[in-house]
Length: 112
Image 1 (cartoon, rainbow, N blue to C red):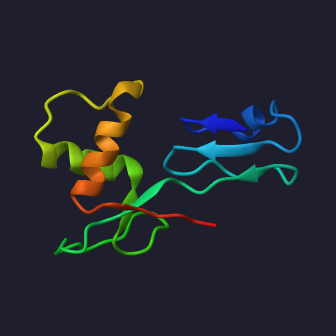
Image 2: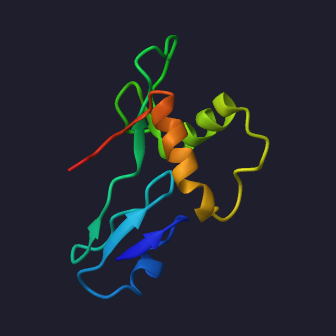
Image 3: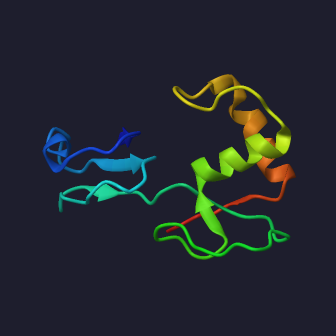
């Protein structure tokens, strides 16, 4: 498995061994350039049921579903947090953010 946190070119993908699964956290998704590898879907969250006025969809996601990074930004605002969400992931806050997302009605989207 390769975890792609930034967009990588087909040439950079060529460094991975055959059979690699690319698990990605990037928008737009990396190009699936290798037939001998697999590519995961982008992480996404379903918005709470009471959200109104959503006038558009995100990239290739269905209506009412947003990329996980955008859900995180909404949760950040809803919680009134003032720390920055830019840069490396603070692993000590993962459970805190996950619980806050669920508390506000966000649900993970599991894609086959």
